[in-house]
Length: 195
Ligand SMILES: Cc1cc2nc3c(=O)[nH]c(=O)nc-3n(C[C@H](O)[C@H](O)[C@H](O)COP(=O)(O)O)c2cc1C
Image (cartoon, rainbow, N blue to C red):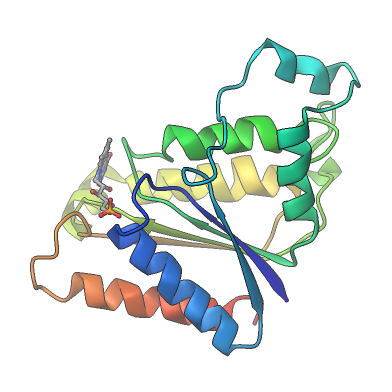
């Protein structure tokens, strides 16, 4: 398979970057090709502006959006690697969805989720998260994100199956083994994508 890994972190040498590397290693060792879309390094413009409403009027999409859509179209599997910021996706990644996953391409505005336009393909989220397992449990945020992303966002566009890995306790490497365990999770997710 050809895997598109969308990476969203301002620092390539971050822990999130290490997660990306381990995921890509696992996927390549499983025989897949991996293309990385590094949104910050590539300078993607995430701001949905007046011109982006053209998608609802049947007009031609901007070239930068078309280029991103072509990347998604040529992949057989997706991976999203970004840290959890304010219990959600970073604004840059959200903007990539806002602009690229457009009406008439990812979904049809008037359709219910079964009317989604993208062909099913596996998608893996790998999301370093500062919170501890106890904090996540108390707040119930994991279940909220799972529902929003699995059903509301990716499911709406026809992407499945979806694997969501919130890599907890990731803000600091305290030596408690969390970072090492998360890198192993990322590697396994790469090996197992599409399996
Ligand atoms: C702007 C910002 C917002 C954050 N919000 C949250 C949050 O809502 N919940 C959480 O558990 N961690 C939060 N964090 C912590 C990050 O998830 C954590 O630092 C990150 O996963 C570590 O990965 P990195 O070293 O690759 O940045 C936030 C960090 C930043 C910079």
